[in-house]
Length: 344
Length: 99
Image (tube, rainbow over all chains, first blue to last red; front, side):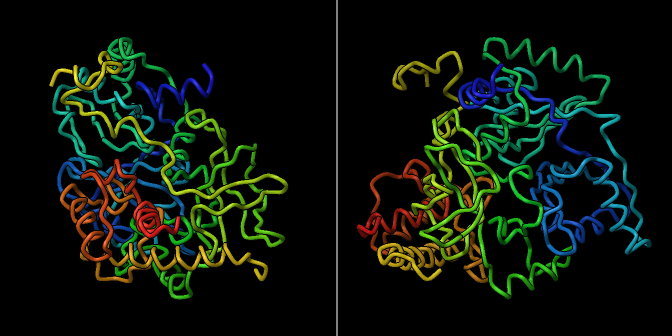
């Protein structure tokens, strides 16, 4: 199965992935909430059944991990992209060592639990078959539990997207059931590379697209930061904000093949560098992100990468099919019918 | 950078002005009391990002019309391309013939 066909499935039907790129650690203890308050860039406190999407920063405010924090039972789950699970545990343990009086315990979860990703404009239809109609009522960044399965609505492709957490003992049966239910939906097995292509097309942040030396200011992720709070990296981040940003990650497209690391020019002047670029099967062009000097980090500019032309763009680049689907009216089986004959 | 062509420099100046207007409008809708320049240009308006809901979306359209004199045909900001802060900036500049 080619990368293009995986992306096509993510944009047109539903893709199933083994989310081994996600590190999962459980944080328990009487001070678990207080600990996470000072660990994450945004307060981890959310209502029952909701999910916080935030960041873990290093002391210099560069991004260490892109995380979902979920309250489960008496503890919290931290699902992270960026670090490996041992590195995440080490980061948490190191932070805990600064305030050892806090009653907190960390448990790596990948030995006990498996994470599946289900993404695509008809991902909801697959999960209704698996978990029931309650899935339809899940807002973005929410949680639903049924039996041993924990379902998070938390996609990063611009389409409907879910993470399913299940104990190892039930993982094989869950996957069999997903494939059985997904067969009429043309379910495809997809990998993290396809997820990253879709993330870039839809301008969702991916730890794998950006150099690890950037802060939420350059990455345009300030909405995930509580500037008035105290957390790891907060002082450095506030200092950088006070200085004023020098550069910003900006979306671009090109008809040429552009590579990460190449310099970006306006006339003879270097105005930045390419952070990530890939062929977009959806758009038929190269899509990418570049770190540009702040003055030039705007859409609709014609720039050069070597002898190649690129054009900065307003994100997102894709008119996601999920935006045009109402799960209460539509289904994969009726996807090609004109809107007026789809039963209400 | 000293050799910015005049048309590019002029575009960037108009873009910054429209971005400032979009940020102030969205800060008002969000009741954001911090510095509006903290609102990133590529932040999504809905879902992840600024987290606007459908009522806020109507406020964006009303704000564009009342505060900036820009009336868009249609009632769904997502389908009008207003999915990010920069989408709002594009709409402002298009309405003024600047894009």
